[in-house]
Length: 88
Image 1 (cartoon, rainbow, N blue to C red):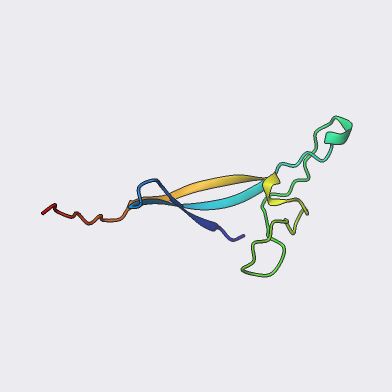
Image 2 (spheres, rainbow, N blue to C red):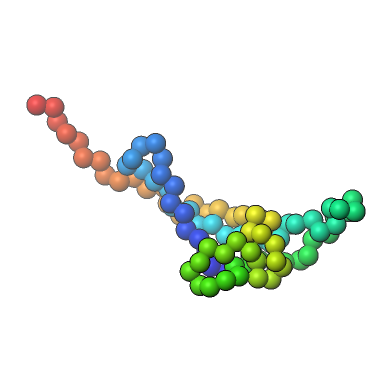
């Protein structure tokens, strides 16, 4: 499975956060209609579709990506050097 990398910009234009996002086991309750609880056992989201496209359906279980547990790992919280202008 490929990881997605997300860059989040903050209010200050000079700082940003880089995060890796992974979707792991499926948590869709397939027995909700009958009042039970059953998951299908899919352990990891595998995007269906062509390489490089943003496929939202899992090739293994057929569920939407939102049913898979999301893990977010912060790679770095970076800040760009800001230029200081002196008032003349």
